[in-house]
Image 1 (cartoon, rainbow, N blue to C red):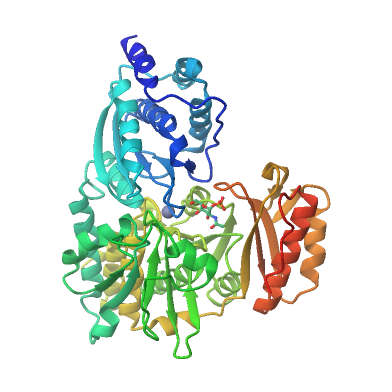
Image 2: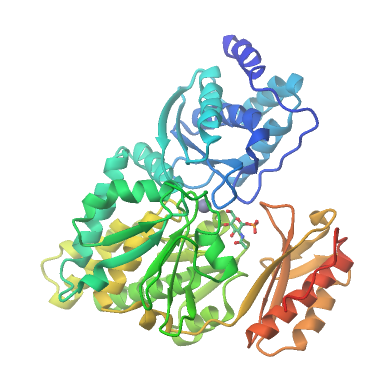
Length: 545
Ligand code: NG1
Ligand code: ZN
């Protein structure tokens, strides 16, 4: 076939470094940008084949999210805007790692296995973040698409969730919104303005939000969006990319892991602040109190605020819909306890990685899912959306139910259901705080986080650690889980687990306990156990204090 000759010719322009093997990680390929040109070309091929298979538009996003500027990565987006189905991750790995001379065979294998009709049209949307490597890498994706005769649309600089949104809009013939950045701003900002329009007495302070854009794409897009907010939300934008380096001592991941404010932002006591990550699919909130103490409101606090708000509205609307919160092992124990025991909400725990959370959330009428690091959204089942819509249009219901139904309808519209989205989550949280007349301090006191610590341990081969029970227990290497159990017993309200990272060559250690000293000590002791039992490399982990 003519296409295959073209691929041979073009793939030679995007050669694979000999011996390089990369795995499809927690959410795509991710490594130093210099090693990714061939991966991008090949993901262009794969997206084209996937588009033929699904007879729908597929998305390819070039970004390495919260990782350093010199890294890059690629994520594939399926027709409804969700992450690519896990069966195709295997195809991605095969294609990515095929030697140059075996590329055509690897591609043909996928085509055969999936029974692809090669005469089917293909359509691929491509987006990129602000990394300096992203321009040429996204061009490599486009080359891959055209090598297989696919059509492509290059959205240029967009946030990851914006690209997911575009794909969903395109494949639902505009029902989800218009597949343009303008359409995105219009949809979400209008919903925000509708939600907040009856919140009387909102002061200027309440309308003001301090944002750390991580020197990334989120900052550019918030600036573009600002006029659509009609001053109902006034954002002071920091780390906008004009001087600082991407994700360097700033952004959601830095703030969450370091548990301190980003550099480059002047925070006034009590002021409501938030940080995006490098591709704007994560957000965390925080403030410093009058004594200068830093308070972090992470994904768990957002899930709690959102699920409380939705549960109250569903009750007021008299709608009997099943709501659940989906978390991972990293969720703070206090949040799980509060949700289950005080809020009486169903809580489910899944493996790390939003694709897992997303799938579990789909099982409920209303599924609120968040990773503690601030990546999350809310999913409404089709039936739930229809019931809410019907009630909002019903002329025979009392005012209270009607008001709740209208709020629910606008809430659905302010949420990007395709994927966790920092911009949409920010608008949702801002709207809820406005409707409830709540300050960030009041939100923070809903429950008190257990002190916690996350550490990384370098080991020779992190695959020696195998986990079960949504990653909360280690099955291998022998003796590790027993060692962790014995260490945990020494502390009060303690919990700890370890798992191999899906995005970095490290083992992650998490610990929580009744005091910060205890959480730090436990995390350190568990790190030592990992180092000793799982083949640690380099120096032994040192105590934090
Ligand atoms: P890994 O490296 O597998 O822990 C990290 C985050 C995930 C997810 C992915 C993708 C933590 C502990 N892990 O995965 O939640 O966001 O990156 O970006 O935050
Ligand atoms: Zn991200």
